[in-house]
Amino acid sequence: MNMAGHLHSGASGHHTPRDYARTPLNIYWEMTQACALACRHCRATAMPSADPMELSFDEGVQFLRQIPEFGDPVPQLILTGGDPLQRADLYELIDEARSLGIGVSITPAATAAFTREVLVRLKEHGVEGLGLSLDGSTALRHDSIRQVPGTFDRTIQAMRWAQELDMPLQVNTLAAAETADDMENIYELLKPFAVARWSLFFLISVGRGRVLEPLTPHEGEKLMAWVYDTSRKAEFTVATTEAPSYRRVALERMRGEGMTGGQIKRSPAYRGFGIRDGHGIMFVSNTGEICPAGFLPLAVGNVRSDRVADIYRNAPLFQQLHDPAQLEGRCGLCEYHTLCGGSRARAYAATGNPLGSDPFCQYAPG
Image (cartoon, helix red, strand yellow):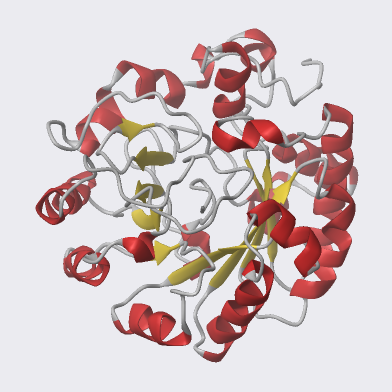
């Protein structure tokens, strides 16, 4: 399964200033829950076959035609799952999106169905970025999380193809108790590849992810310091997903190095500051439900009956998520709430309140 919330349009280098309360940077579409893998941290709890209620081709087209209603700049569309390659109409839907002026990226599963020919075809149809998951520096480590032998080798092969075909590549790595000690080795493994972005996804206990062990806040802080140090020397962007408190860590480090406000804003580490679940991001499920993010599965509408731009701008939950003053607990009191805002998905998973404190961050505000 591919962790929606992962691939950022930053992979293709487009950065147009926008008001995230009006227009998201990324819309993630879980095209199907069908997937041949059984990853231990799957948000979607993906299954071998598609949900009979998933959006049909015509409904998918109707949804895509809503996206330009956001106006310019149009959000980037990220096709996830399950495995988007399991949809027979995948290329027609990509063509429809491209004809509407929507940039498209994809996060396929590393299965036997994902061949070099498929990647060539995706590129021919105008796909701008590829997201792959790599959760270990060896086959033993990666495949034990992915639950299917051979997945590591397929992923490395796909990375080579992406390099040969000059396809911008984002690699997503799970940050959990099982993987933290392997990060340096994964970084070394990635160095020879033309990776655009490496994103460390800090585990949230939803779906199948409940069987894995998240990092403690102390371990998380240590890993974030390592991410910052690595980002200063890496040839590619090194970032975090579902760990917005990294922004506080990075900001404190940059200030400690004597960087000014202008220098900080130009720094690659600053990219994405202010984006959080439901603010800069929205998610559409395989059955058309509109949610703030894949890991924040609170449906506030459905593309079958609602307009995505209207829901994103006007639904009460989205309006709350757009406004950092609405945050509660420590996140509400924190001076970093605009740039960070905490993981809304983790707050919801821990407390049932999407506006509550992110338990992963131990920072004492003020």
